[in-house]
Length: 121
Image (cartoon, rainbow, N blue to C red; front, side, top):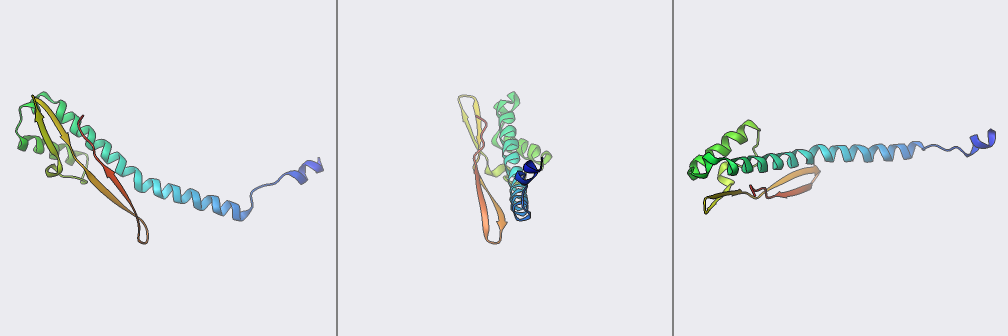
């Protein structure tokens, strides 16, 4: 029994601190990055909903942008405005798309730049 106790080893305090710091950094990075991806998915869903809406197929550009503005306001989306959306009508098919960049400050002068291009197709 004593031979087994001598062979058992655990994590040192320094090892524990390194693992804890790494876990905290991953958690902080996740809390900063996840909302950008959630907003991109919401924007893509709004664009798809508008493009699939039969009432929007014959709507004017202004009405389509107003519809986006209302839906984005409900979801608290401020990354892009209705003016940033590209609207294309081809043979009665409505396609909406946009491109935008999110800059996330990390530490000091280090930043993370995420580029998104959600569309209705």
